[in-house]
Image 1 (cartoon, rainbow, N blue to C red):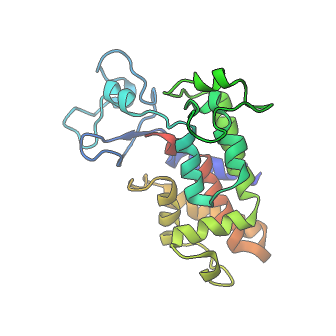
Image 2: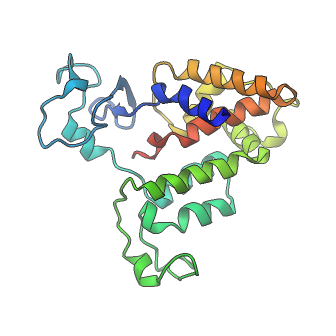
Length: 242
């Protein structure tokens, strides 16, 4: 139930975003694409989701441009983002880095053990021929969501993420941990989307998630609020876009 709550409240605010590369590369525009999600239609004609927009509108990105520039990061990129949030862990190796066929990113023959087969990783030849440009496979999302869940069920990783959002060591966090507020939500968002603008409505969604999570476990309200706010951010797929 709580997971459904998180995903439901974040859904509208974390809808597929257009990225305004013409104004500032990597900065998300506040516009939401409810249509084809940036799919290349073969021409620049705007569909129903683009009504009212013109090439001169703030943040406008054509379908062709959006498709060409919004590429998914490979296994190394996804693992590096999650490590920057939660720190290193065996989960990143087994669930992300070893899943080359799902995330893309061929093995490095010069890196220790990267190209050498294990029972679950496939042959050395297969690992060296994985696509360089990954695609959005269902298996990729299943592994990524598993990685998010496996980290966030562990309160030690929740505290690590909180400490990194506050730019302090875990030992320097206040005890008891304060309930997250708007500044914390902004900092948590920046862990997954550094340098990008917060979409309209997302902070309100975070407030509601935090309040509901805290109410369900009053004796540990603060860490539960953090846990489910981070879960919503981690399970949103859009931080994988390069």
